[in-house]
Image 1 (cartoon, rainbow, N blue to C red):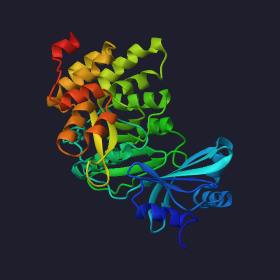
Image 2: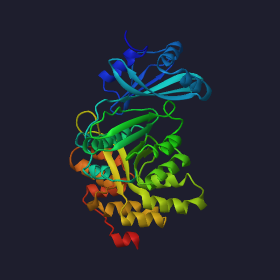
Image 3: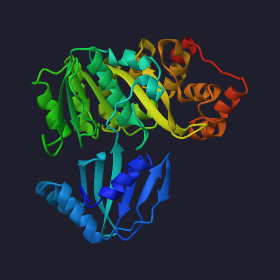
Image 4: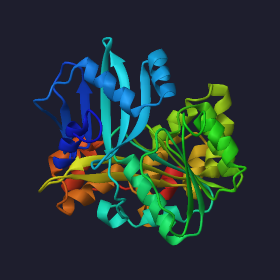
Amino acid sequence: MSGSLLHNVLEKAISVDASDIHIKAESPVAYRINGDLVNSDFVPDTEMLERFIEQVATPAQIENYTVTGDLDLSHLEEDVGRFRVNVHRQRNTLSINFRWVKNQIMTFEQLGLPAVFQKICEFGRGIVILTGTTGSGKSTTLATMLEHINAEHPRHIITIEDPIEYEFKDKESFFEQREVGIDTISFASALKHALRQDPDVIMVGEMRDKESFEATLQAADTGHLVMTTLHASNASQTINRILDFYDKNEQDPIREALANNLRAVISQRLLPRAFGEGRVPACEIMLNSPIISKLLREDRLEKLSAAIAANRHDGMMTFNQCLLDLVNNGAIAEEDALRASDNAEQLRMNFEGIVLSAGDNQIIG
C-alpha cells in the first residue's frame, strides 16, 4: 500500500464522492455522501489512528494535540487528493474528521452562483463575509471568488488559513498562502503583518474573535479588500455575531465601522438537487447600500431582511427569494426549500403566488 495508513479509506472516499470522512477508534468509518452519513465495514483501532497521526503531523502539532486535545492540519494523500483534517479526543479516544478539498476550483457558473458574485470580486476595499454552517460550501465559494480575481486582475493576494485548503497557482495575480501554526502564530498576527506586505486582497480563513475582527477592520480601513468567513445563518445574524464580540457599551462605534467598511455578506446553504445527485447552493446576499448602512448605524437589524428583499434590482436577495427561484427552475424540491427556509410560511405563500413587498420608505422610515 502506498501513502499513509489510511490510504485505502481516503481512496474509497474519493471513489464514492464523499465530502467528509468520520473516523473514531473501534467504530466503522462513516462517509458523508450527498449530505447523508453512510457507514462502511472498516473498523480501525486506536494504534492505527495514532500511527497515522505520527505519519502526517509535525512533532510540534502532535505536542499541541497532546496538550489541547484538538488539532487542525492539511494532508495531501499520495495519488488520492488533498484533505482538511481535524483530530480530537472524545470519551478519551482518538477521532479524526476529513474534509475532501477538491483540487479543481470551479467557476461561478459551475457552482450555480449568481452574476453579482463577480461584482463583489471587483470591490477595491472593504470587508466581504461568507457565512454558513460547517459543510455549507463557504470555502469552495471563497476559493472560486479568489480564482476569479486571479484570472482577471493583477493583484497581490495573501491568504491566512488554518489549515490551507485550496492551493492557488499564479495567473494574473501573485499569491502568498500562510498557514496558522506553521507559517504564522495566529490569524490576528498574520493580519497585522500582512499590512506591511503590500497586499491588495487578504483572505482570512475564519474570523473567530474580537482580535481577528479588529485586525480585519484595520486592514479594510487602510484600503484593502478583506474576504473572510464566519459561522452564522443569515445576514442579520452575521452582524449580531460580530457585535457579540463586544460589550453593549462598545457596540455603537462597531456598527459605525461596519456601515463604513462592510461591502457584502453572503450566507450560503446547500440543498439536495431535485433530480440526480449532488447539492445546490442557496444564498442570501446583502450588499452595503445606503439603506443597509443606515440600518446598521441606527441598530435596526430587524429591518435588514426587508431591505434586502426590496433591493433585488441591485443584486441582493433573501434566502426565500433564492429558494423560490431554485424551485421554479426545477433545481430543488419544494419540501427541501421549506425545510431550509427561515420563514417557511412566507415561502409557502410565495409558492402560491402571494408576495408581500415592502417599499424602501417603509423600511427606513
